[in-house]
Image (cartoon, rainbow, N blue to C red; front, side, top):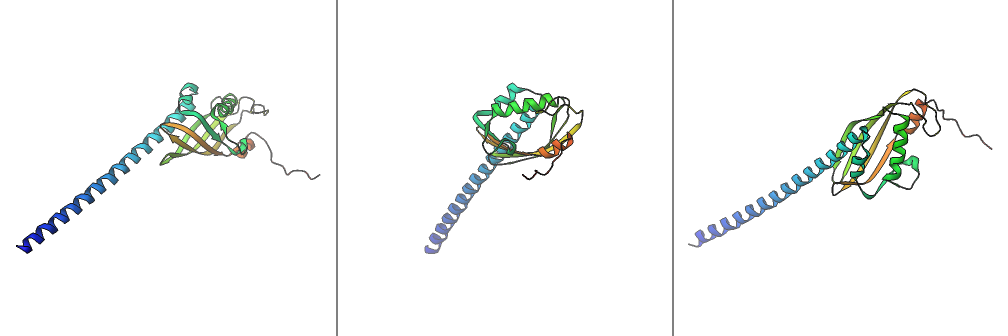
Length: 179
């Protein structure tokens, strides 16, 4: 009788342990699936953002950003700017390169961040910050990291080949003259 009682007790403990492990494993699986779904939604947000960018759809682009969202780019200095300010620069590029289009090469999501590697291609047909139209076809690579919360972009960091673009427009890099 003691042996049977011991076997039953051990069986119950074993069943309880297996059941607890199954619940824990199921909870972990559900959390992983939720994270994967969120990352896919974030990637889709950025895919749509670039499609709207290529279509010059400012209304849709503005819907992608949270109020007070910030944009960072080394050529703008150390401080971030608002997306309204960033879009003024984008409009300048659209005017200088009316056929400018972005081609996504890589799109990677991890947690609340999405990293995009893309190439912008266009023909320089208008003034760009004092550089008159050259008619040159240009291509510049960039990488941008987006921070997303609640389905909105709250921050972005971009690194682009600005020097390569300027060289394609005929600009030269010269050493600073000594005084």
